[in-house]
Length: 373
Image (cartoon, rainbow, N blue to C red):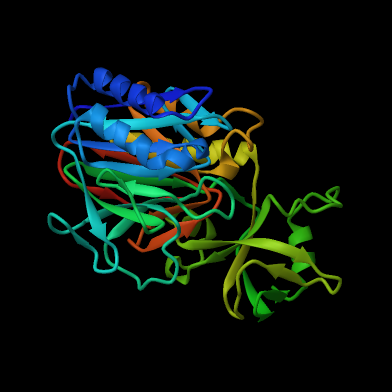
């Protein structure tokens, strides 16, 4: 499978910049034209998105150009935020992305064993059988997603592509570090967590944190609801993706906590924290397992939370640096997304936050490695 990526940034968002990126990727792949193209652009291209996509179509001599506008983009060569940039990946024979009607999950050219999904979050659609990975993103917070496929900007704010040809190996890094085992929820009312393990939720949380932490870093802490399918092993549930992360919204005077999502009595809940150190450690473990599973990868796609990129790591993307260490020279295309999509150990599709989804594409065979967070 002949594939390559390119990242080109500049002072102005012009179709010429996109054309340059596509031509660089074609030259790296040794191709005169592409069979499929993935193109992600920064928000500066929002006003001339179709012109940019058309430039990619012409430069690649290929109508199968898909992608969208995200807050930031990256490849194995680096990342771009807050300036005009185009990140592109071109594919020769042996790889195809077929547009899919997500409501029926029917690909234009047959069944869809794996779907690459991007744009706005699918929302309340019925659960479907096809495995999904990708990300939800828009150029700016609160803006509608701007996406394209088959060389044209879509009227809908989301797209899905059936991945045809390569095997897809998937891993997820949640970046979370558990602060203790899961405890049974004694009382809850909607989003209010009232009692946990025989004490107030605030007392439970403070009990697993250093005593000197008088101010709780709520932006780094999370409640983790554990799936009972894994039994009593909290760490195994986190490692298999059988969990749901819930943000802590507020600490109340009575010791209860307000969570971002509803919680129910009888659920098992653990406290966790996400720091730069815990995130790099978790990413390293995920990439190590992925490298062991996929020794013949031809390319990779990565969907990273905007909260896990350079803003989180103090001006550098440590997750991207770790990827390059484990997979030196492997073509990579990625975006910074607000939500990430991946399937878990049981094959159930999930929406994630503050995570990194890494998918390796290999020319050989058909295999789908379980997602591990």
